[in-house]
Length: 344
Image (cartoon, rainbow, N blue to C red):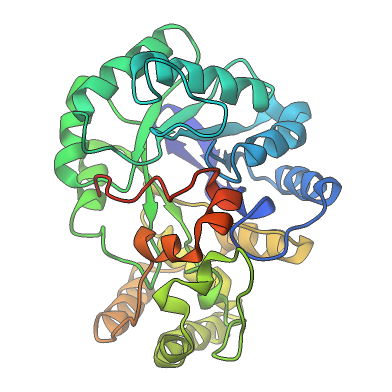
């Protein structure tokens, strides 16, 4: 597996987004199978593992901790701090406080069976606090050896610059794919300029760019795609021409559409895709994208083609909230989606 620099960390070019092992994308594997798959990804060269306390109300961290304990010293482990209290996290000072952050990191470390995190991100930035104050809190965690680096998620260029000035950021994590390019002219340019890694979640648009989803696909239960507009039957039909472009270039290079989607995302060396992968063949396919060569000319041709096309629908926190309180409790452990109304 090709390696890239994420701040001072050396990581695999393709990482593993672990949320789907516990929630959000339909039927999940048995725990034993999830653990096997996470370890298989390591055996095939993956060293970047992403989770969050908010995923499945802390259950995903527990699962990732079990899976990565034997390989902990060989991977880069990333988790995220939720500024709102999850079940059992109610403390007098409130979750959004210096004490709340320390309470959160201690819980994550315990669940992840480690004494430090390589990278700790703010899951969403609350409007009621200045990012400079958060940066000062994270400074203490670094001084204490609890974390090696810090980052933000879904934030603007302005926020990145303000945070980076107080405490240099290692990474920013946001949605990015052929069908979600909203950060290109904003935070992504700033990350590239300042030498900050950009971790791209949902790099295959929730599986849409793999070519395995059609207007006949049904999303049930706690699958967040059930209420995200990009996956409505109407928009799945309208977005098919983009999928066909990806298929065309995949056939020309004798690779899969998923691999074209990933190699397009990682064409710039500061970008790190973290797709979910819950089957042996998906692990082999996604990690294998690191070996696919996309020349500058090929990248430019694909990009210019995409620039002329329209993407229908998107992914908004407000749409996920429409799943209803019972499903949201299962997904996030709160009565509401805590990322609503927070700084984008």
